[in-house]
Amino acid sequence: MNSHQSSSNSRTQNIACSPFSLRTVVTAVHATIRLTFWKARRMGDEISEGRRARRGVALHHDNPVEVSSSECGKVDQPITIEILPDDVLLDIFDHHRLAALDYSFVPWQWHRLAHVCRRWRSVVFASPRRLDLRLVYTYKKPVRKSLDCWPPFPISIWYPRSVLYRPLAPADEQNVIAAFQHTDRIYDITLTITRPLLEKLALLIQKPFPVLQHLHLITRDMMWSLALPSAFLGGSTPRLRHIDLKATPFPTLPRLLLSAVDLVSLRLYEIPDMGYFSPEALVVGLYATPQLKFLTIRFHSPTFPRSQEGARTRPPLLSRAALPALSEFSFKGDIQYLEDLVARIDAPIVEEFDTTLFDHIAYEIPQLTQFICRTEELKSSPYRTSIFLWDRGLYITLYFGYPSLQGTFRLQTECEEASAQVFVLAHICRQLSPIVSSAECLDVQSDQHWPDEADTERWLELFSPFNSVRRIEVVGTVVPSVASALERSAGEMGQMVLPALQDLHLKDTPPSLPEIESFVAARRLSGHVVTVRYAEE
Figure 1 (cartoon, rainbow, N blue to C red):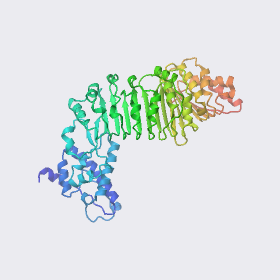
Figure 2 (cartoon, rainbow, N blue to C red):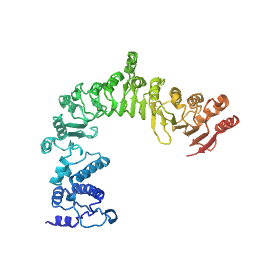
Figure 3 (cartoon, rainbow, N blue to C red):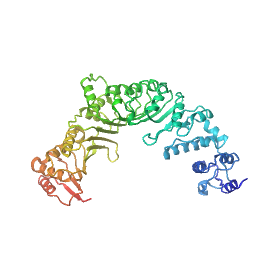
Figure 4 (cartoon, rainbow, N blue to C red):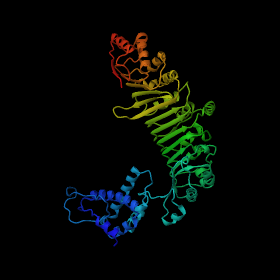
C-alpha cells in the first residue's frame, strides 16, 4: 500500500446505525455520494474509489456524516454500503439525480455511479427509465469513441453556448454531425446553430426522430435568411414534448404541430420575418396539442402588413381550438395578430397572461377582452391593478385572487411620448372595463419627466372605469399630474370618478399638495371621507 492509500484509508469513516433507521442511512449515503464525487473530480481518483467499494469499505469524505444515537438507536456495529439492498441503492441514486437537476445546469453525470463497482453499474443499468439514463454528447465528448461502450441509451446533443461569444470548434462541429447520424436514438437537442452547420446537417435533420422529446435551437442574426426546411424532423414528432426556438425561422412549424400530440411547452422567441406564420395556420396546429401547458409567441419585429392582410381575408369562425391544459400564455407582436389568435382559441385555466404590443396608438381589443372573460381565473374580479409608465413604454397588470395570488394579466406596449401614454392607457382600460371595474386597489407609478401642463382630461378618462377602487397609491414623477386631475374631478365631475375611493397614498412627494387638499375637502363636503398619506421615499 502506498503512502497515498494509507493516508486515504486513515481518513475513512464508517457510517453506523441500526437497521431500523434506513431513512437516516439513505440521507447520509446521499450526502456522502455528493461529496465523494466532488473529491473524485478534484483528485481524479475514481478507480481507487471503485476498488475501495468492492472491498466493502464505506465511502468517505473529509467531513464525515455522523449519525446520532437519538436518531439511530443503539450502535451495535459499523455497516458498509454493501449491506443496502438494490432497491435502496436505486432510491439513493434517483434522489441524487433529482438533487443534481436542482443545483446544476449540466446534465446528470450518471456514469460516475456506474464506474464505482460492478454492482452499482448493474443497479444503474437495470433502471434506465427511472434514472433517465442518456448518453450526453457535448463539448470535447467524442461520439464515435464512446457510443459503442454503453448500452443503446437515448442520446442528448447538448451544446448550449451562444456562438456569438464562442463558435463551435471544428471537433465539436464534427461531433454534432456524428451524433445526428443516430436520429432514431436522439432524445433531446440543445444546439446553437450557424449557417455552415445547418447546411451540413441539411439531409440528416429531415429524417424522422421517433424518440425526440426536447428541441431547443438558437440561431445567430445572420441566419435569419435561412429557414428550417419544411421536412424538418421528418415532418412527424409523435413524442415531442418541448419546443424552444430563439431567432430560428421555421415558417412551417404549424404543420409539424399536427403530429406533436404530447406537446407540453411551445416557446418561440424573437421570431424573424422569415419565420412568419399566420394565426390561422398556428391555430390549425394547436388543435392537435390538447396537453399544451406553456405557449410563447414572440415576434422580433412588427408583422402589421401581414396581419392586416389576414384580417381582410379572415374566414368565418366556426369553432375554436380547445387548449384545456394551457396555464401560461405569452405574446409579443401586433395587436391584430393577437386579436386573430385569441379569437380562435379557448384556454379556460390560463393563470398567467403576458402580452407585449408594438407601438400603435389605436388599440382595439374586443377579442382579447372576450378571451379573458372566457377563462376561469382571469374572468373573476381582479384584486389589484398596477400601472407603470417609463420613457419607452407602459404596462398594466391585473392581479387576481386575494389573499393568495391566483393569476395575472399583463399588457405592455411601446410608447415614448408621455401624453400619448395616458391616452393609450385610457383607451385600453375603457375596453377592459368589464374586468377592471371591480378592482379594489390601483397603483400608478412613473419615473420619467412629465410636462408641467398635464392633460388632466386624459387622466380622468383613465380613472373612469375604476368604480370599485378603494385604495390608490401614486408613486414618482406622476404625482403632480394625478393630483391636478383629482382636483379637477372634485370641481367639475363630483362623484363620477373614483366614487369608492377611501385611501390615497402619495410617495416621493412633499408632505402636502394644494391640489390634493382641495380634492379631499370637496369629497368631505359630499359625505365621502378620503384619507391621504404622504411619503417622501
